[in-house]
Length: 122
Image 1 (cartoon, rainbow, N blue to C red):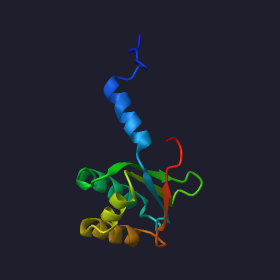
Image 2 (spheres, one colour):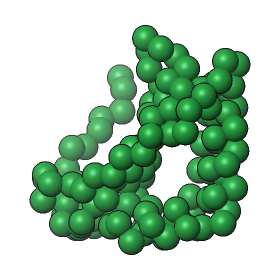
Image 3 (cartoon, helix red, strand yellow):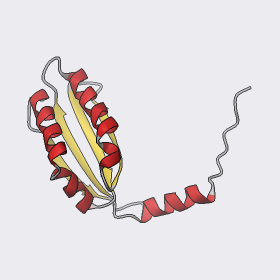
């Protein structure tokens, strides 16, 4: 028999979730198309950021890289921050700028960046 998974969250987990809901979450969404043959390099670049820069990025909550199943060279990168100020601080970071220049060298177009704020759930 498989292990039983409890659906009851601890007090600490509930407090964390409540804090997440009340935060002014700020989200950036970038869409870009890889140059032919550079798809794996884009994935590796995101993995490198996660391994080497994510822990140093203040206010970063989570992120994901999505790949279009119908157009496998198209990617969507989504990053969640506590607020706009933390996202802006990352955008101004020299190490992040070097990372971004590398990304631009791997794509056909300058990534289209859109910014969002969370409206629901609050």
